[in-house]
Image (cartoon, rainbow, N blue to C red; front, side):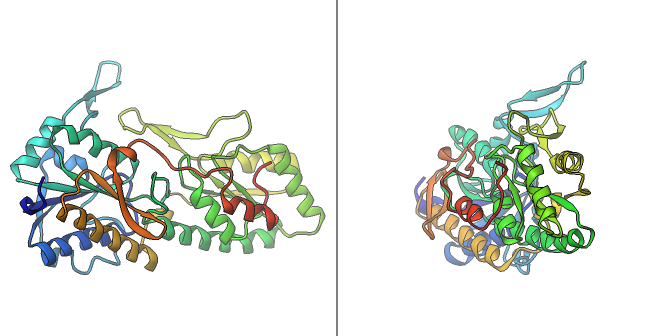
Length: 367
């Protein structure tokens, strides 16, 4: 599509909520109005709003004073994949899925949208990529606290989540030391350990356990006993929700059959705390931060990054560069084809510098 033919764009936020979403909505809307005189429409609750035709205009005033707000003024959904949309259940209670992309495209055309800015993670980029063969024009903005999208060095929301997790770990040090306990704190991240690695280092954790490195419970037990033998007051363990023992499986809290991403990880901290208490004879407690990590006001760095992403997304549209996702590479704003991101996760590689740093300062990584 020639850049000059764009007159109306939509914005949607898909997947889990994340600090900085409103900053992107604000940047896209204001840049579109100020620099290009485009009309802007908000699509409610991610792709669900496109399926159900819940779309409304956004103007300058509707996105003013939202920079510092957490969450998203548009709402979001992590269950609405137009290519595989749950429409009900069969007699056995199993979900029935249907391809409703044509329905979503009908509403896209009814509102005369020329393109949509899709703000989301790998699931949202997959949904967008599956819509493009039907004439859906889009630009992606990488959103996830997990920091696990391919081809970008960082996603907005990650830095806020690390700050929140680090503050929690700081507070756990005092109570753990007072009671001479092991405290296992569980952090989000799915199959990528970025939050746990960064917050674990920033919080001075004694043990950091990641999905990318299976842990040896025997080694962990010896580390805890050795610390107590040397009169260390406590042991703080940062564990990612996707971590697993050697020859073991991830801890699954729930399976939601109707969701495009049915596995909900969680509870590994409770499992590990019980195991450590039994093998070390040291009192242990588990803390699961959960959704606290993704809520509240975005930090300054995420506000700036989200604003950069929103402005860059509008620039891509204005130059006719469709079906691409904005990325940060080497500190610079660039873009990649959205198909390169869809359905993929960026995990911590064995040669990552922070792993070497952690080992050098005496942090045990589970082996």
